[in-house]
Length: 461
Image (cartoon, rainbow, N blue to C red; front, side):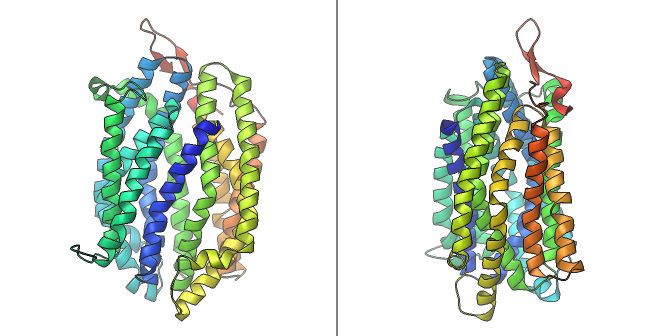
């Protein structure tokens, strides 16, 4: 499990490095630029999440096929996932580009935010959507390799991509050397270009290296029966991620009704808290692979042992992180917000309060992410979807609204409500996991050629 998990923790750390590099340099451009990222990210994530559900399906199936020692089926699923998600990325990119202004127009931004922040968010989003296929390409590559059990190769590719992004950011944002000063658009261009490099390398590795699923060119030709099976498993996961994105948009809509410093503090806090998810998501995704491969090999007790170990490790690590974050929130926030203006000082104070309050949920984040990984690895993507709905749409969104607006706690109410969602989700997930209904595979040996078929149990609870 540690062999699988630590490269994924590094991958997630590098993913956060993308975001933090943008935040770091844009924070030196203006607070409005940081606020624009806060508005843009949930809207971008809404469309990315649709394709993300199907990459998850590919990872689940590759893991179980690999555990069942059906290498040919794993390669075929990998090829079908790659071609289907690439097509989907192109469609979603066009839709996102054309609907950027309309999506931002739905946010009830105050006059100051509407005038100074929303236009910057639109500039960033349009470039991002144009390059969406490059983002999806690496997501597919990483997911398929994870299902196969190879997490080090995607990590190495991610290192190259992040290095390119970190170097390009200041050149494109501020116009260093021969580059034009592009502002927030420069951050988007740097990210898309670096992702494109990662995608090209990843596709080459899938087809030519032999260190992952055995994919060949004919595997890209549409197999509609197999695509239907991928969709069957992927739809609940896509729905889960889309509902998560909708929750983020709803929360952002509440936040933008406050002043720009509150919006900026919310964005900074969320990006820093994303660091907390690193060990949790790494162990959760390792659990996904461990459960998938062990269930494919009919090793049910070993799959359960993996979940227990991962949950314990995640809880311990995040408890330590919570102590550090609760003791030193101001210095942590101040690293990413420079300046002695009134807005900068207020942003740091609000961000520190946000970070301190959310430390109460850190242990629960770890447990929830591991259990979600277990359900996904067994193919119970519908269960993971329900748990995410509980955490976000019962535990978080209505709580934020009641505390911030009904009880008139303002920004503090937002911070408290954000913390309660994962606490509730983790409690429900533990109870559901103890039922034991996840101990089933979604594949079986069938057919004269030994091709592994997907069962309909992917949608059962």
